[in-house]
Image (cartoon, rainbow, N blue to C red):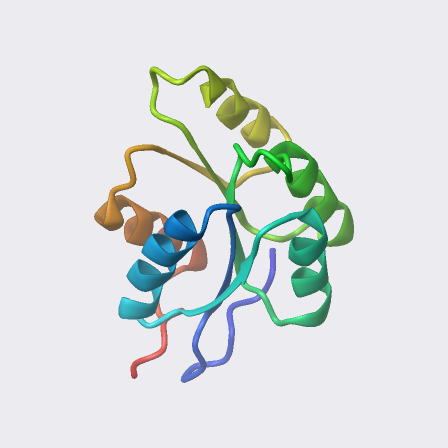
Length: 137
């Protein structure tokens, strides 16, 4: 597992989502809680960010029309097997929900399903990063 950043430094999260509305909503929630956020819209961008930035956790949408989430998860895991990944996907009535168990079997550390709940999102991220992983602004 990636080590926690030094005390006093902010935790950097990579958010991988194809739609700008989803990216903006989640990014604003994370920024308000003190995280640094990088974004990616596809597999190539996601892998580039993981290779070139100090990423502590990846939040990844599994249903991306042009950049299928499972392939992106596999690519990130191939580069950094210890990366903590949160797989996000559909409402339980959406046929895409079967991606969450598959993501878990491929190494996702946590699963979040729609509708997005800011409290659950932050609790999940904090839980994966451990106590004291957030910077105080």
